[in-house]
Length: 410
Image (cartoon, rainbow, N blue to C red; front, side):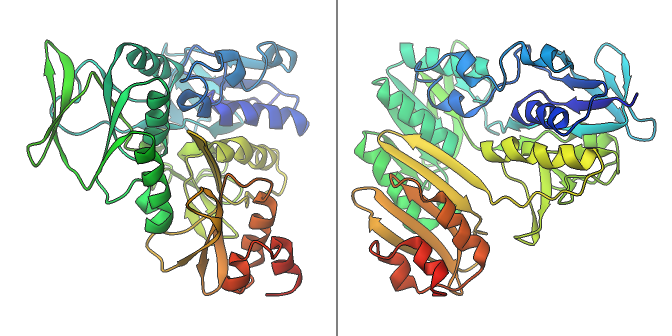
């Protein structure tokens, strides 16, 4: 009987195993992960788990007994060191070779390291796994001040958790605003103002020269202009690199992740990729896109499972992500290329942080971000999918239901 193998036991890998069983695959199914934990979701690591508001079980993808109940052979603490597409085999760290009929790569991504002297000092932390979140939580409990390098989603969420713990926080961002490339200046200012209002020392447009230390432990950050910032710990959140090593060595097509088609099939017809590592063709957006967000790892495996079973499938869900910081909750739906021209239209009260922001090009809605406004993701997605030009004045008017912008043809 044909064996299906999934490399990577995170959210994407676990959901792929679930989808394969739900789609009727009853053959041998092996899920391989380097970590010793059962598959878990990562968003809590910078949110409730980091803030000690939820335990590890709350992050689990499935209850512990699910894998045995569904005949999924779970190989934890196991690294895959080689992939042989021609031989339809993967090699494990102990030398064992495991054959497959179909293979899914869900190897995720790894935090980028800070390329400056001192980056290997004790107390320099990144966030990807349970153990990373544990170390940051411990640092917050014993530190009076920390520095966060990088004003992206991870950096800002860690900063918010640190402020909730009463820790002094300095956020160091190379761009003129945090999240500038993701959101553009209009919306990025909302997050800059939010953190400054909550006591964060936010410094933008800075360049880090080195991390300073004493006795092998980090003591602060020195900027290129000579400024020195004292810190008991430094959290680095400057993005993640896709784990493409297996694919590269196997000769698969790799370009900012493993390139796959809309069915998540790689350049080898029996190998698929999903989650953070996949640079997938998006049929609605008409481009390849690699998305490092929870929703992608949650939903892409359903498409991959169907395609692995020979069914017609295409992943065309719009990118979606969310964040919770202080008293701000946000959801973002859609995609905007930061290098393209667009305008931003706000609906609601930006000063009170209760609004929806829309990104438009030629009158068409490319994306929408709802901040402390709920139950609007479906109409936002409908506006994006429609490709229909809308009247910006009506879009900005809270008295006009979003559904009306679709039904009236505005």
